Image 1 (spheres, rainbow, N blue to C red):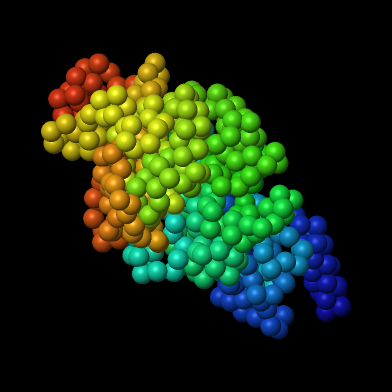
Image 2 (cartoon, rainbow, N blue to C red; image 1 turned 60 degrees about the vertical axis):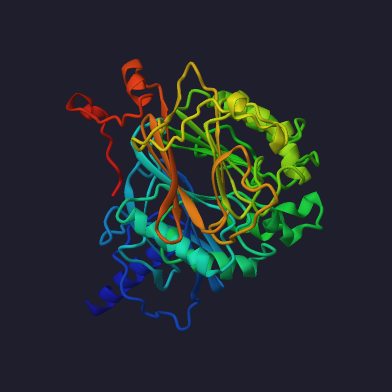
Length: 493
């Protein structure tokens, strides 16, 4: 009888090992406290962090200090991580893709090798993205020029998290220059991953864009080696259209959807396979962008973001720096022709925000508020005088608000004619991050500063009824009635 028991245990163990070797998805028990089972095991030195979020999938990445195998256990309860995805390949940079998930659903997860649980807990969770086109309340943060390991960087992070409280951040985006000064792997580790590892990275999906400092890592390399620089090796982006939008087939630029909002991440510094930059009309990036904008022109909101701003007088000057001049003169027309609602940039280590504007492609001196501003309102939408939200509709898509938010780490700078005439509000003394809060046909954008104050905000609305429009133009703030209860959209918790 004892021999039979030993034989049965041996066969069960062999079957389990065979399932692991095949990389199958298998049931898993709740992770136990970290116990060394096979002697010395590698330690976690980066992450986990969330990439390429979609309504039905999520990529989880992390790094260990030695080669190891990869496993993610996950489920809808922290005590029931009942599904496993394995990779038997020995790696230091681990990338596991979770598929066949439910949209807008909370999942808990643990990362491990085949012997030990490396990290798990109630704070290791994420929400999948909502179905494309679905209305709800969505929050997206934008951080520009963040990775310098400064006190300002940490204060900006802390105040953003404090503002969020228990509200979930559906995603956060990077506006470039993510690790100073040269975008090396070591700088990303010390000044980006180490700073955000305990909060933003493990819970909220990240969608980055590169800046010129990120390109320093391989600035002198040929085109064939461009995608070997640190930035491209450590981020996984939806270049095949996995998260919505037209496939770009490029790690440098891509698009994705979060419910009724279409986001476009662009590369304003690198060159494409034609050796062209973003602003050149013959570039592969512009050709792709036009296709993507055409396909997604029915989306309720369109937000584009890249590093180099077309309008700034902060630490950089859009009148004298050729790359910024070329973007304004040759590229902005594309953005405005397709009615992009909001453009977010970094590069200049200040905060600058325009009103709803269109058609200003020249230097600062040629800006004419009466001609180029489509609305004279501040957009504050707080009941104060001349504070109506910026209004757009399916029939009238004209106008874009331009924001420079490059002070989530780096801070300061002013050119001789600061602030730029096209900007309603500018600040070069305090750092901050942007938070977009979108609820159906309304988008609220807030600049959350390193001291917790919201020094600027504005609201945009789409397809407002004539009666509501009349009230808004009188600086009234709309309130929802019980008749509109269906419009009262829940937020993720």
